[in-house]
Image (tube, rainbow, N blue to C red; front, side, top):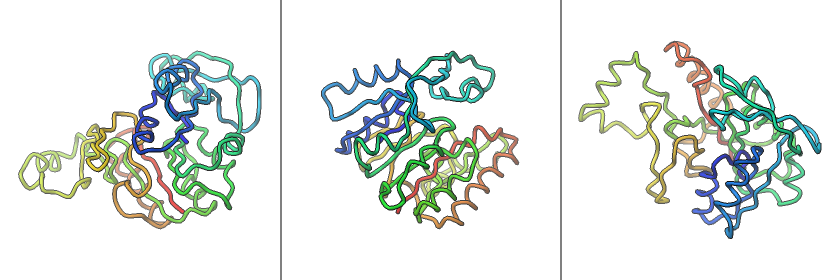
Length: 258
């Protein structure tokens, strides 16, 4: 289940892996594009907002310049001084879709500030085997996943799909080392630029910018305990603050497994 389908690149990868996919996208323009892109394929597109209640009409804000920022919250949708306009859409709880389609093997959630609302719909006795959520909008998402019953975690840099922190502009030593023969021999994911994207040779797939990347056991690095995952994310945030980079650019997902 792809909650936050956007342009469909994640859904396309899940299809490539042989899965049937339920794709949830609130933006009606994008939802229609998804229907066209995946016509005749095992994809169900749901053009609804995921929220705390069932409603025939709620306000949803669409960013005119960056549709990945569209959200229930106008401040989130129009961040960094960009412009957003309001549309009225139906809203539903994630639980409603889970009852309709069943609990998926993997649940990807990326809906700009409403991720935790999705967690409230999950049944601890019948969880997806794998789940991922964005960590950029605050709250103790890792702790909430642990409370639900997830025990294994990875903190994945969404610029590289590894566990590394990016090489910032002021880290001259790392930038020079990367250009040397020794740098090329460093373990994959130790240090990367934030704009380096990932090609998965195992699945013959290149992940575009903005996608969620590999999932489940194919994610980079070892699984962590909940305390290790929280410590890793705090270290990452501290690295951004030391480099003077705004925390909204600290774009990491948490992947969790039962």
